[in-house]
Length: 384
Ligand SMILES: [Zn+2]
Image 1 (cartoon, rainbow, N blue to C red):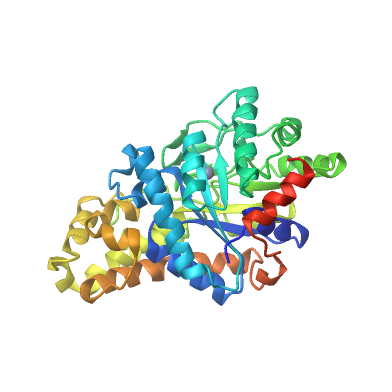
Image 2 (tube, rainbow, N blue to C red; image 1 turned 60 degrees about the vertical axis):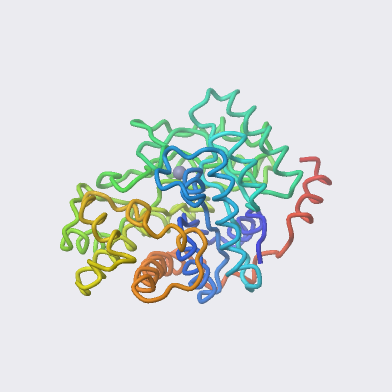
């Protein structure tokens, strides 16, 4: 069933395991991600970034998404999650990743998202507080969870870009939780967005440890989020290179480092790039193994796009010619079935191992199953 993200993070915090959150950009990915979470009896957080909503609204050039595109896309994502997850035994949250402004948040919540991020991290502290507080008020009245961000991560992810990182000041994080009543906070402590994190990322574990310790003393019940935490599996990078991809300096965060930060107080770990890489490899492999598909009427355009964009590994770039099935799912036949199967298999390969590594395996029954209405009532009673 669909639940507010807060109850999923409460269980992760209480029982000291990590909760990965995966970005999805097609109904096929949603279906595959839910299936593997179910198989591993794990709670699930599926997230769509602001521009992913635009893409899922039919905007192939998603960087130019309008608010209308985002509204349509949010509905398509939620419809996909409901189709495969509404009757599921596992708790599932649908979360807006990097909501840009109040309008994006409203589009997501009206579309049925159970959680939203408002990223005011590029604003001065007081303006970030003000924007986040406004979102918290709107979202909590509807039982929807809110994630904020404080501190700036280096790297690129959709249109979230920064050349330098500014670590989160632990005392500012405490102040931010108190002033905004936000449920979760993304912190900057050494991780980076994108697939080029550089070798040997240095994680400043003192930052989450200090924040979590102060939260205990101050009686704040909130959760910490690690962005820019894709692992960029090196075997997939190698396979992509062997298939002709032109990729450079592909490095993620070591899985061992992520497992460690869970013990430092990180509750939610965002993973996007890993799925992109596995799906892109599967698509390239499909056209190499079954050469007749290269000239297929229904999917040949995908092959040409892969060939024209050898430096790319974002599946959204390649699948513009099959948007109907990307946005709405539904039965895929013939050659199209081959592509959808490749997308599903890549998603499962990226998701499954992390559910085991982070200790999420088998934890679905630990999550309190409540509706958004019940959550709204709880916030109201607590005055937040
Ligand atoms: Zn992020």
